[in-house]
Image (cartoon, rainbow, N blue to C red; front, side, top):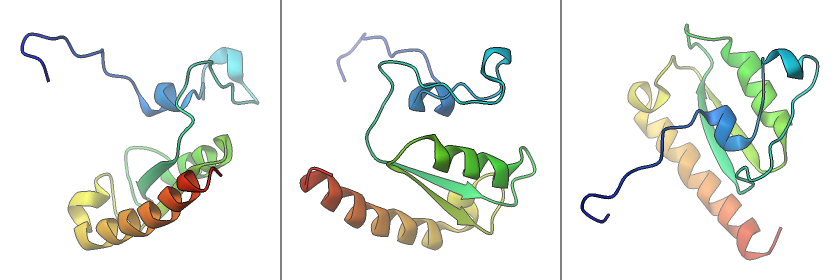
Length: 106
């Protein structure tokens, strides 16, 4: 990083993936914005997360578009802290699969 450079403002996962879940204009559908990231994505989702409806969120993200993989773990809000070895296994397996698909042009 260059000294003194500014970072872009933080964006939510929905913004990064182009989803428009929950806004009044998107009731009943999910809209995808132009310029959104369309590469492979791994979501490490703790299904016991007390801060949101984790199962429904995982289902919505999975259905958003091809290339999004959701790993459901028996953990809460921070599965990477609660189950680091399991998270690492999911990431390793996903990297092997998704990078092979990218190299093959899929």
